[in-house]
Amino acid sequence: MIYSDYYQPDFGYRLPVEPQRGFQEIPKCFVRKDHTCGKYLNVSKSCFVACPSDPEINYIVELIVAKLTKISIEPIVAIRERAYGQDIFCTKICGKIIESQFCIVILDDTLDKESKKFLPNTNVSYEYGLMTALGKHIIPLQKEGQSLAFNIQTHDTIKYTPMNLSSELDRSLKDAVKITQDKKEEKRVPAGYYSQRQMNRSLEINGYKPSRVLK
Image 1 (cartoon, rainbow, N blue to C red):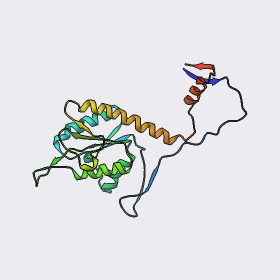
Image 2: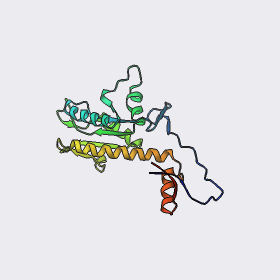
Image 3: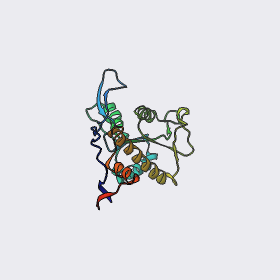
Image 4: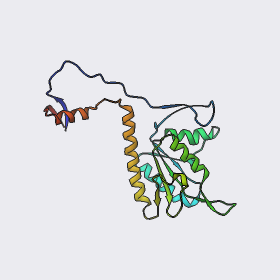
């Protein structure tokens, strides 16, 4: 039920409703000197996915893409993006991170062909740093049994296995959508402004009765 009107005393004034706040623009590039950015934070209903270019994790990427698509979030997979004739860093990486609603980063070590050792992927680490600097909501994933770099060991990272990957993604994606959507609404609505639903609930708590009920 939605209460459309209430019996309440008229005190002779109304609180002004402030206009909604706009999106936050990034005017200057914080990586390249004197480079204009002009991108807006969190304007796209998308998720930027940073991951190594490794066939071993293709099934993980496909699972992420399927789950994002199912909840109507556009997956932006860094290694699959193309930017022909454009600035690759701005168009393919940084700009997509800025505009995304939230991000996923796969921190799996990959085999270095020269040393024959498993090492962290430098591109993924750089993209993770960009996400952090921009204050993005991030879902970090790493295969169980591998180790995180010392400076991100305190981050809440999902240690996945083939058994728990799907359920962990479902949980973390649900949280990410709710958290980022709530933050977006908070930024759009000025401090001190109450929605109609909040006003109705406040009136109910204080004993006011609806004069008309809409179903």
